[in-house]
Image (tube, rainbow, N blue to C red; front, side, top):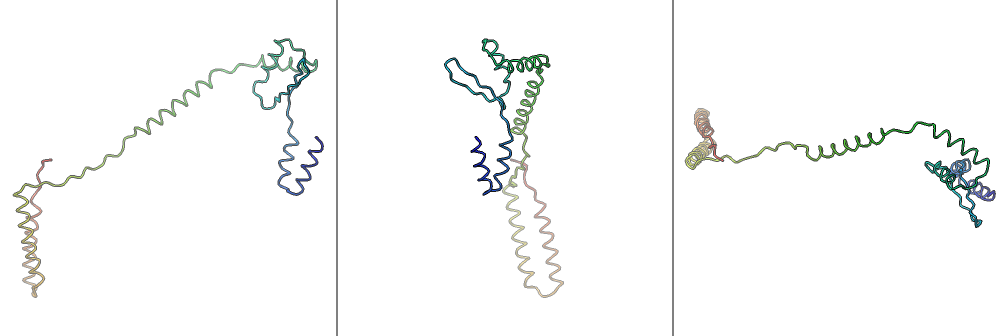
Length: 180
């Protein structure tokens, strides 16, 4: 595999950003074992990223597979130290359950969060007599407004303004009915 490293270094000279990946890749070691079957075939297992790989060695021991003496010694030491370690409790499962319950409760709370109440606008309802009276007052106020445009003296204008104000007060005094 020496030729592969030389090719990568030559390519790295052309593209200097590639050197970072080459240096990281060349310094990483992958640990593994090779299992040789009775018919001569080999099975290579890389242990670097294999969780709980100790179980593989325990299965090989139970099946009475012959191991390299040096490897058997290392396995025996590692398995003996892993058996004396404290077993993990159920705290992770309990924590995961609590977090799941909180996530579901939060989702449900958000789903059923009360919305702001909207103001219901309703039109004012008047009786026919009140509407007729309001219409009459409105017509009188319009007549006074047209007279105010044609007046030249301020005394007459003030008198018409007072009449308009009294009619407007009467107009505003007519209240709608409370019926819906």
